[in-house]
Amino acid sequence: MSTYVVASLCAVTGVTFFIFGALVQQHVSYRKIKSVMLTDPYVYQCRKHIFNALSFLGRVTKGSIINNAKGKSIVTGENNKQFSERQDSVSIFDQFILWSRTRAYKAIMYMTFSVGQEGYPHEEIAHVAGIMKYGFPGMDEIHVYKNFILSYDRRNRIAHWVCEHVKDECLRMRDLKTLHKPNEYLADNTIPPMFSANMRDFRNSDWVGGHLASPQNYKCDILRFMEAYKFPNIVPINRGLKNHIWLRLENYVREMALKFGSVYVYTGPLFMPQRITFRNWSIRHHVMGMNTVAVPTHFFKVIIRDDGEDGDLPLMEGFVVPNADVDKEMDLRSFLCDVHDIEHFAGLKFCDGHQRDPVDLPVNAPSMTDLRGSD
Image (cartoon, rainbow, N blue to C red; front, side, top):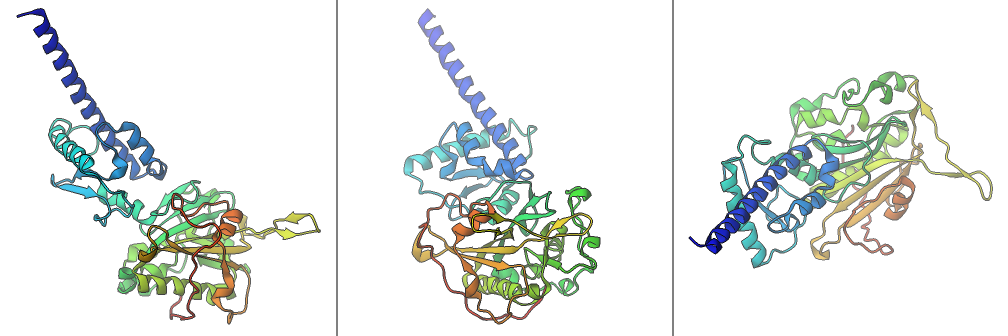
C-alpha cells in the first residue's frame, strides 16, 4: 500500500473522528445548558449568544428540531405553541441542516445516554419563555414561580417588577379551593428573612398589602392562586386605592385577556421625585415596620398584547397610579402614561428587542367595564 493511500486514510479517519467528537461535545453541552436554564433565568436570558457560540451545524436562533423523551422530532418555531418566541423563516438549506442535525443527535443519543440530564426539558423552558416573551426589564435577583416571574429588591423588601402572562382559559375556570384565601401572606424560603417583609410590618399600619400579580388571574389552579400570596408579590398600598382604582385596573387586564385571548403584564412600584425648590428635586417615601419595607409613591402597569394587523409591533398600554386615596370615580384613561416615562423612572426596559415608534406609541383607551371581584 502506497504512502499516499495510508496518509489519505489517516487524514479521513482523523477528520471523521474530529467531527464526531465535536458533535458529541456540542450535544452534551446543549443538554447541560438546557438543564441549567430551568433554574437560572440569567442563562436563559443569554441563551441565544451561548447557542450561537456552540453552533456547529446551522444556527439555533432560526428555529431548532430536537427530540423529546419519546424520540419524536419537535420543531420549535411559530407553529409550536410551547414556545412563544418569534422565529424567522427557515430556508430550504437551513431545513436540510436542521434535518441533518436531528439525525446526528438521534445517533449520538445512544452513546451519551449517561451524560447530562436525560432528554430535553421543553415544558419547563417553555414556561419561562411563555411568560417572558417580551424580555426581562431588568436582571436583579430573578425568581421564577408557576404563574409569574419577578425581580426582587432586597434593600426595599419589595419587588422591582413582576411579569405575568394572563390567559383567558384560566379566567374562565374556577377551582373551588380558591374560594377561600389565606388569612396571612406566605413567606418565600428562597429569600432570607432579614431581606423580606412579614405580617408584623403590616399590623397597625396606614397601608395594606397589595398584589402586583393578582391572585384572581389564577382561580383555575389552587397552587398558582396561593403563590400570588407570597411576600415577594406583596407591596404596601393605600386601602382606598386597592379597593377602587387598582381593582378596576386589574379587572381591565382580565377584560383584555378575555377579549384577545391573553395579555402580558408588567407591574411594579415607582419612587417618583418631588420638587423641593425651583432647581432641586428629592425622592421621599415612607417605610413600614421593623424591616423598613419601602412604601412606593406610585405604581405602574404595562399591558402588552399582540396585534395581528400590525405585524411584529405589539400594542402597549402604560398606566401610572399614585399610591394614595384618589377619587374612585376617575376615568382609568386619566392614568395612561407613555411607556418611555415609566422606563425612565423605574430604570427598566420593556419590550426589549422589538422595534416600536418612540413617539407615536400605539395605545388603546381602556373601557370602563368594572368586572366584579376582589382580591
